[in-house]
Length: 197
Image 1 (cartoon, rainbow, N blue to C red):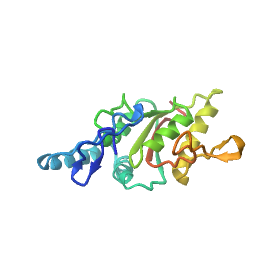
Image 2 (tube, rainbow, N blue to C red):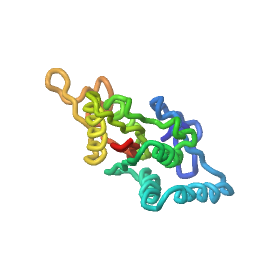
Image 3 (cartoon, rainbow, N blue to C red):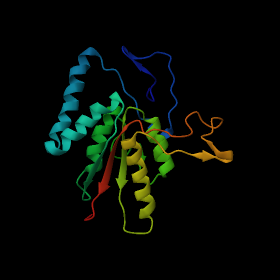
């Protein structure tokens, strides 16, 4: 499933409709024609030439590992401002939708932890770049660190945060089908500015 509909063994499934959260609207994969497949593979492989292998190989592997599901790891790109961390992550993200360039990534650490958890749940078996983990050294950093910890733990443990509702009931089936323990079901890639930024 993706914003453009369902994809089956033969490509896009006709007459299928999918509703995704607004930040995931650019997750659109097209089925290239037979003549375009070789060019699509060459374009994808060209990513490996944009930075040293120690950086591009793990990122590239994560792009192709994510669709198989069961990913229990995240990648963290850290460096000084101006080292193209976001641009590099966006090239990876664009494997899941061409419109997701460096200025149009699906998630950002300005979002709440709950919003990031929901996006991570909905972006099943896909790469989800969460941009701009940038602590300032101020009082607001604790919420930033808490959101990042929650996101990484959900991915590593392959489970979300449980919720207790009134009258000692876990979850609330009347509100949402997946209202408790939303497992993280995608591979995270986070960009961060280092302490020397």
